Length: 404
Ligand SMILES: *Cc1c(COP(=O)(O)O)cnc(C)c1O
Image 1: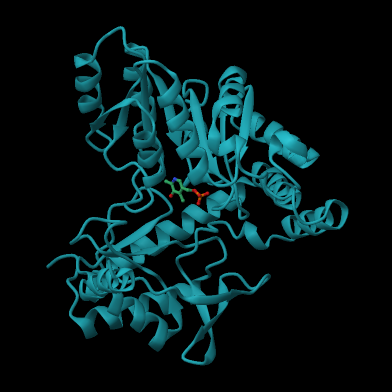
Image 2: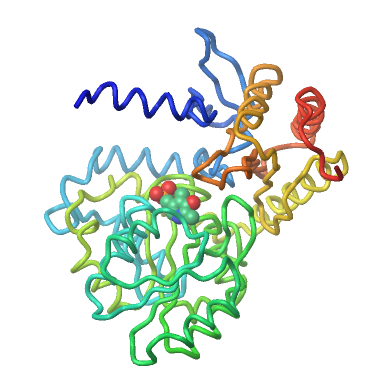
């Protein structure tokens, strides 16, 4: 086989479909959020970033930077091993305690990313609980899907956020079989939120465990910010809360929070936990400082929601088709891969505004969009420029408006 030709041909297919991915070459500017330097065509441009998942700008917060810098000075760069073999640093222990308390659970377990947390936990449960049935929301993230696929559990897919469909599948399953219901709280592409209490009601009725991916809610919902489970008063009812330290917490890493026995089980049997070196101590120190700050500062969350609501209202008033998001995520529908990429290119080249196009397979074909994520630091003047730029591009490219 001509391997090189094979690779080149598959990439050519992607280009033809208009969904070849080009990364924006950025240099973030600590203290100047949401501004960044953008390297393109041999030049450097200042751009306003409108699509970061550092939702609350915590990646540049002085307390986080100080905690990380101090930890690098005291502990050095890397952890020096897996958690089991010399790699457990005191900051990992403190961070796991903080995560457990934040999520009102007995324990928490750190992973190197949210992706690994989902993959390892779901595959380990699937491989070790005999006859486990997993009931998975149709729009669950790839990391959950891959984890479930990798495990031996039989998987039932329920219609997105449709509790009646979930109950129909639960009722039809063997009453004696162990069951797990897996879902997210905030769905990151549409910005909708799962009916958590109703999901817990039916899961409890059928004796199922619950698994909630809070990745796009961590830091942003609830009085102390642990997520939508906290906001909706269901933390005590959800068996396993999963999250990331890489989005609103602003650093990197993933976790689950659950009972002591469950965390101890995944710690002891999960390959993705056991066989990978621990996060650097400074990462754990930075995440710890970030979470402690987030717990005390609900005003950040209020400002964040206000910014998102304001942007949605302003775009809607201009006829720009915003999806009916009930969260901080502002998805703007384009509905065509090439147009979506063109809109993004024009924003960057003509307006120095960076919003990455979201194409298949992240969203279905025909549902290509610009996914805008306003933060507490996107001020009114930046918003004026964004709205004007989008109105200009919609007219130039003839993209469909909301009312048409
Ligand atoms: C980003 C994401 C993950 C993975 O988290 P990382 O920490 O970035 O690996 C998991 N679930 C969802 C829904 C995500 O969007």
